Image (cartoon, rainbow, N blue to C red; front, side, top):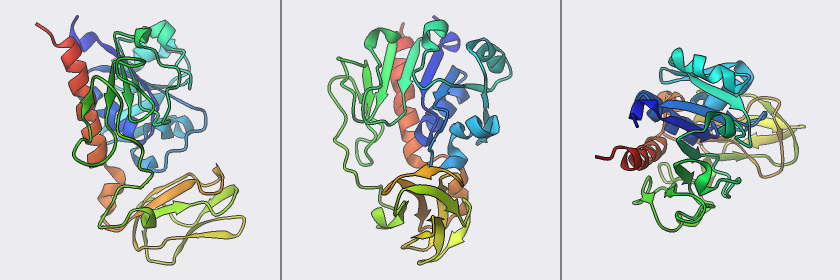
Length: 267
């Protein structure tokens, strides 16, 4: 089988799924994305899921386009774009019969993937067992093993601690103080200082603990629940980082690419 003819289905279109799809597209694989009708990506400027709202989304020169049916997938590939379907259950797999399925929803559980769904089935992070319900697991925890290809067993347990940036972890995360509808006061890429009200929910403010740049923020008008992550502030204050794929995303993309080539690039 020619590598260029591989059909790859990526479940999810959030930040990490986007990083993976972007890398595979740049390697000239045929990639299709599936997403829910109400995606909740925080780092929206680097999430192809924004195409659900805006019909298309471009990240680092690669465009994902919302399509209405599996019939539209092939034409989108011909236009050198990534097709995205609203299909949270990935029913399109029965029509496209992908060679590779990658669950990049980061749901922390298996959303119904089985090893016989495709020749190669890959799960990101916790919730998967390589050799039992998927062929390969990719480690998503930051640290020495980030992006590691696991062929037997599971990924490391979820620490529930946000990644450290300049020593800040939970301090840089913006969380909903109550249930309600998000009303944003700032946009991604804006500079804020400690104590600024980045958003509010029915008058209840969401203040940033630290200063920096708003790297991620849910869309204005999103319905949220108490404790839900609504955004994050990057203390480095580098605006460019808001609009480019992260080091973690690139590492995960590399792990997925390794798993695919190991399976299909045989002599």
